[in-house]
Length: 195
Image (cartoon, rainbow, N blue to C red; front, side):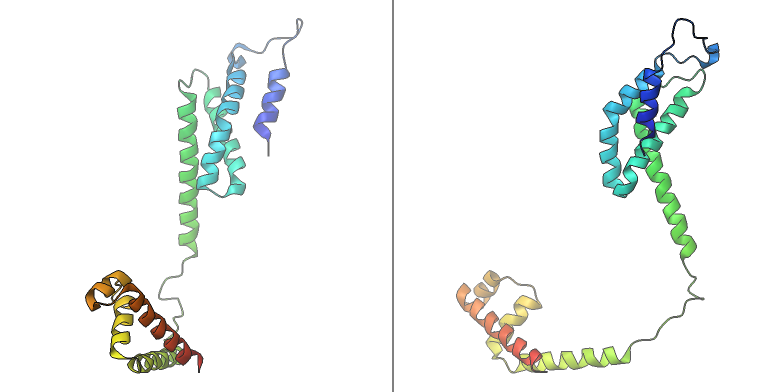
């Protein structure tokens, strides 16, 4: 949708000839069409990037058009001149995004179902039994490891210690810790795949 550039192109090429009647005084726009065209050329790419980062990419061009349309409407009001059009345009862009966010929130709230009307499912007993079975299998597999390997594995996976920290605590080398971890992981993998 390229309304603004097409309209600006038409307006910038439409010039008064020698015998053409002049518009009424309240309709005379001195330089605002050219100023809007220059502003569009200067600000549209940045505004497009602004909208592309903060909204759906497919809506970015429409938001740029809407911003410039609102700017043109605001500048067309009789007796009102916009002193800083870039700042005014940025304010319009921010407000457009804010309005879209409010509308999205309202739509989201309208789709929500009160908790009294929602059908709540109970806990899945099969999933609970499977999870308990898996935990038992892992615990049994860990108990079949040597105490040193089990302690190193739990220190890394449960306590979150690094291999270096485990090596310092146990007095092993880094390669020794890696060996114990590899042994524990391969053992657990074999046990969990066997079923």
